[in-house]
Amino acid sequence: MMWLSGGFVFRRGDSPYHRLDPRVKLLISALMFVSTLLVRSFYELLAVIAVMVAVAAVATVLKRVGRTMVLTATFSAFIFVINIVFTRNLESSVLYAVRFVAIVVSTSLFFITTSPDELEQVMKTFRLPRDVVFAFVTAVRFIPVMMLDTIQIMDAQKSRGLELEKGNIFRRVRNMIPVLIPLVVNSVVRSGELAEAMESRAYGAVPRPTSLVQYKSSVTDKVVALAALALFIAGAYSFYYILPVQLP
Image 1 (cartoon, rainbow, N blue to C red):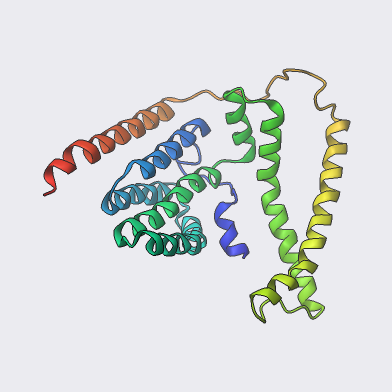
Image 2 (cartoon, one colour):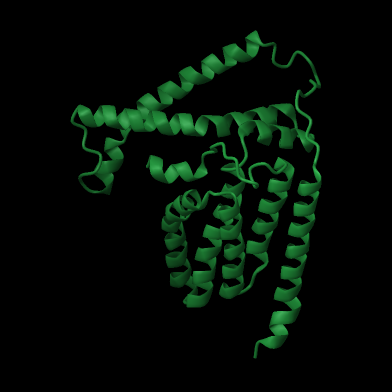
């Protein structure tokens, strides 16, 4: 479980992609996300995925992106089955299933290479409400904590004789109750501690607090952003105007 979910958790790195301005990384992920929605054939989608793999290679997170693909493969298989049952179209079913994987990978590339602090600054750049920014960033920060709590609780319950991997689906769901209850209790206790910490630091006392960090785009950031935009425009033009003419 931790091996799979680790594909969505940020870890500090020293690659050229990690050192980019977080706003540039957000732009790249957004362009890849939009590209997955614009493509109309399986081969075009494979080209977009190839770009994602290239970005992951530059960021040295290929293994973690592989974990993301493994985790989303189950859901994409479900999407494939639903589409093949209702549409009876193999090509569109494969396209929708692979597109789901590409969408998840395009978003995970941003989150696994951008720290919560950088994410907070990016959201403040768009002048989003402070409470919304705080809630979202706090949720991102607590994801690895909750995953670790879940693993620890499951190990503790297994040591007490709880069988989580035996029986039919209904019995397995019922056996998860001794795991969910302590997890919910821990989350409630942690939220209370967080509320006390916010009050002790006078959260909300200043309507528009200033930020300690101010991002300034370097020449490299601007070049990468322009290159990403140029590649996106060229790809969209070729997909919609050049390739349809060449295909029979």
